[in-house]
Image 1 (spheres, rainbow, N blue to C red):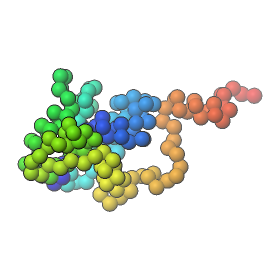
Image 2: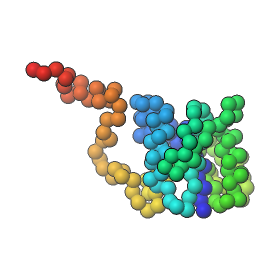
Image 3: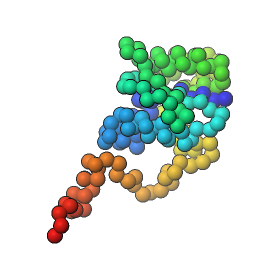
Image 4: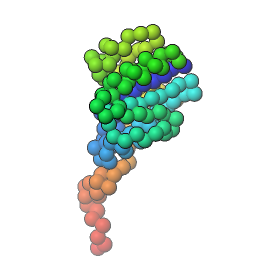
Length: 163
C-alpha cells in the first residue's frame, strides 16, 4: 500500500490551476478542487492525507483525509508525525517543496520525499494509468468566478444592456 502525505499549501501554491482558483475564489475553494482532483486519481491501494497550515478542517472528501496543523504548530511537524506513524502500514511518500524543513528530516524505512512538481507530473497527470479529464486539451478552462466572467464580458463588449 502506498500512503501519500501531502503538504496541501505547497501543492496549491505550486499548481497554476489551483493557485488561480485560490486567487479567484479563496483557499477553501482551492482545497475543494484539490480534494476532487486527488479523489479522481486515487487508486484503491492508496491512502491520501493532505495537511494544511491553517483554516478549518473540512473532514474527508472524495476519500481524501485532510487535517489542519494545530494552533502553535506548523504543518511540517504534523506531516513528519503522520509520516512516522503511517510508516508501519506501507510505503509512505511525502509530497512537499519544503525539502530542507521536511524532506531532510524524514529518514526511516519506507518514507520517501517527492517534490510537488514531481507529484503533479507522476500522479495527478497520469493517475493510475488514466489521463485527467481535460489535461490534453488546448482549450482554456471555463471561467470559475463572477470576477472572471465579468472580465470576459467586458473584453467582448457585452454589457448586459439591450440595444
